[in-house]
Image 1: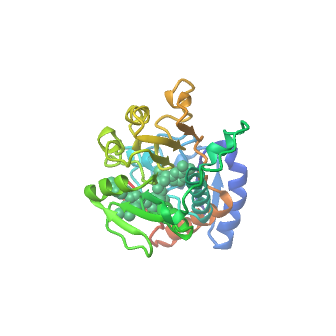
Image 2 (image 1 turned 120 degrees about the vertical axis):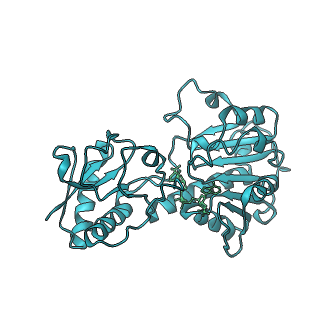
Image 3 (image 1 turned 90 degrees about the vertical axis):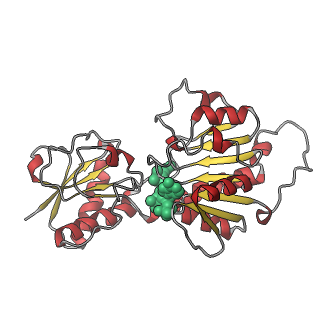
Length: 312
Ligand code: NAP
């Protein structure tokens, strides 16, 4: 029987995905059809899902074997009570490379003080503004999953002193790994640049609140490419106003697009980046979706299965 896959992301992505996904399915000899539009809900076995699509109510699909997220962040699916089947999240090489490039670039921007050069084209020769070498700079990565680990390794390869923090204890060569609440406080107190690559769960929501911001190293830089809800917006603005946080580069927000009236837009010490750190690329992500459909059809365990009780 032909397995039916509903493509439930924004319509603009469908043409590209249909072609590459069909080719990846054929390569694996999976008899499956990808369609856009949920007519005949009874027939669907899989949903390739992204939150930019129209789908909210999954209860109308009685025969689902899995919802296959096209995004790495799956908080919407975990919070949706109509999603009762297994959920997989996206882990793919293009996204990992994209995030590594974005985080490394943002870290180097702050490390080398590029803003002073870009904004300082005013006839003044500031030769004295010599940055330290990366080996003299401590950078923290909060979240050591697929993306955090890749970014931490990339920064380590540039000789930064890298500290990582995660829920469970880790051992990564060349990276000082910490966990637990005390590990978090010690990490943000030490790091000059702190990168957030945590998922949005009940435990991580508002993790960076006034209490934690008070523990950050003085004049620290924050780079958030995890999720907007990790940071208490008002507490961040307050910490910036007090000079505790020197700059925050934010790619993710509680509400996206960030409303034009949001105070972040008018704060010179905040850089707003429009959720572009690491997009899913059909070319590198379609093999992951096709492989999970193959596994589902053969009764094998799915790749990157979400632990709904953990929230990620
Ligand atoms: P992942 O592989 O699931 O890793 C998540 C990491 O966070 C793990 O190290 C996990 O710890 C840690 N963690 C989770 N809850 C924690 C807690 N309460 N305390 C401490 N550590 C905790 O996720 P990923 O693929 O690296 O992606 C991370 C996030 O990046 C996604 O959830 C998404 O929100 C975001 N993202 C953003 C973009 C963008 O364009 N801006 C693109 C893709 C993804 P353990 O290792 O101990 O489990």
